Image (tube, rainbow, N blue to C red; front, side):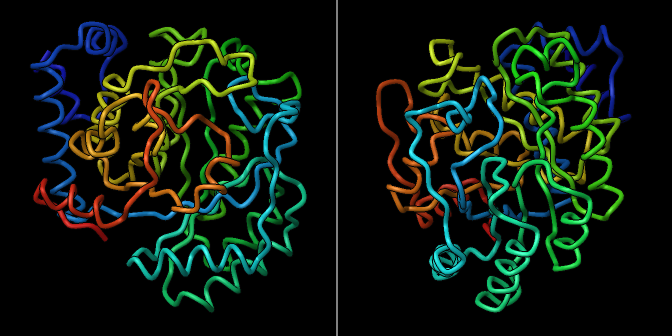
Length: 337
């Protein structure tokens, strides 16, 4: 197994059978060795800095009815909200007071936020927090919107492909969504000049090893600048609400694999990891992740943004404390940025 890790580090990829073995026969020794190599590569490429990104969920409305998501259009129990520009700026200023000037503006696929309105938000935000970095995750938009927002200084765009295999994609997404369109949008974003992020969920229903391998190879061949993957967490009032959560250990294992496959990529440690793994985001950092998403400490907003349940087993997770997260990173001998 260590031979596979060494080859992955040397050439950035494996054959199908080798990858299957690496995933199928994961063990503690291989995991530790893989994590060690992933952190070595991160150190060489990124240095000691772990980026902190403040997530601002600007809207809980969505035009799509995805089977895994609590924001799905037909969820009559979802708490719906939309942030005005002034509140978005206030949230980012709150992060800035805590030393975080990297912002992820995220929402359901909400057509309410027009191309021009988002531009106004970006302008207001850049005026309020000088030198801030912005990543958007607002769903599928027009080429005109993508170009306009990129021209306004947006650094990256996250758009998960979900599943690279057509039949599996159809089982987890609604019929009015297209895998081909999603892939076209990803290439469009890349051609415009964004750092493009895509990803998938480990443990989502109907997923097998063959699906995971196809997802890994798609992200590799696309050359994603940002890897945005996580573990599946069942959300209430969705078709998948009674399904089991994804495996957090497998998720961080694959993150380490991506560090060796895409050394320069930003690999995100998402708050969902804490729902399936104790200190999940910190374990992701130990597996080579270099960016940690931090949630707002505005409880009402996060509870309304019901993409997933903020629980680990039966226990409610506390709201993020930036100083505590910085301390955990420092204990690992790393610095937060």
